[in-house]
Image (cartoon, rainbow, N blue to C red; front, side):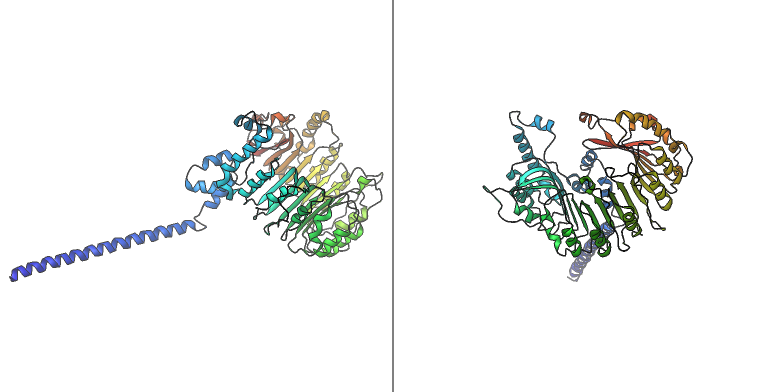
Length: 557
């Protein structure tokens, strides 16, 4: 009996030991699994840290990638799909090209019906990406209800441009109403009319508080569409406002009282005959940082007010339009005290020498200067003299030498030792101007040259040959060792070759801008550029509707 009990006790003990071991083993495995998960979580955290997380780097790379390549990358993996989707779907096109529309839709449909069918398809196919669509340009004529359906679907748009369109104010209000995240609104070449019958909007639509930029260009109002005006004026947090060629002063009303968030203000109106409304705006908004005005009613009261009260002003455009009204009296504008202006653009016809002196000498911190004199006003013996502070800080100069003589350029090159960027329009007698540039430019890194507009197309060939054979290319002045970027505007790229630029030791980029197609049907076709003449360079192109630009970029050795 004792032997049986002893045997049973041993078996029981072994079971307990085995159970205990199994329990310990399970606990050990659980601990190991938890430890492994902890390590994985820690590794994941490390990957999420700024040092290990490469998502921002990939996003930057994808942002500069061609659309076709982006579509390919989108299918590589989940991560790349997630990163490329916001870039691919950031913009949306309302309808396809006309040749594709004709192929996919019934030929019996008229133009408007085909476009409407294409828009319906666009909405259906892209609705799932609606949250990603942030930018859109609307310039296709649609029925109001279809347009409203589109904007109701893509209500997350933050940057909207509407241009070249004639619509009712109800049509506009219906489109703008769903856009509660709008940050930038650009309206250009619009005709807005008031409708009385079959109205579907009878109240003002409030622009969202997220709106920061509002640009209005050439807005025509028919029959006083007051709801449109009140809607446009319902903004409350703008940082930038621009009104150009809009002859209704109603859009200025919100700025007649303090508007603290406003930083940049631009206003072009050559029909404005009094500046009292502008002075009222400036009186209430001393915080302005940038002011751009095109007027025919400039006077000393306005210029004095700008210099005396806009203490934060760093950018100023003074564009005098009065010479177009055959007013030949000298314009006297004076700054009553020094300013903080760093960027100044003067486009004038009647401005006197003493006015120029007063303005320029009261801009001691000037870094960018644009000078363009209206040739319609230039009188005999009316040479301009330029005076700047002795410690001129100008780094960038834009000058039209067709209307300003070479002495002005020569003076500026001498008194602006920090100048590293120059944009110049050549006169017909261009050699002396080019000579001043290569002889007196000591630190120039970027140069943009445009030929005279008085050189007609049949003379271009001769001008291009003479320019490439000039001392600018063949001399050994300091500019050859400082220039890194050269832009030739309206020069013929197909007549050029790398050998012409061999003496420029530091040149990294040669850009040919404003290249014309000659015939719109060649849009998108390869240019006739012989790259055998450009060893050591790669060719980049940028197309727009009516012209294109080419850039020859040096390949690092």
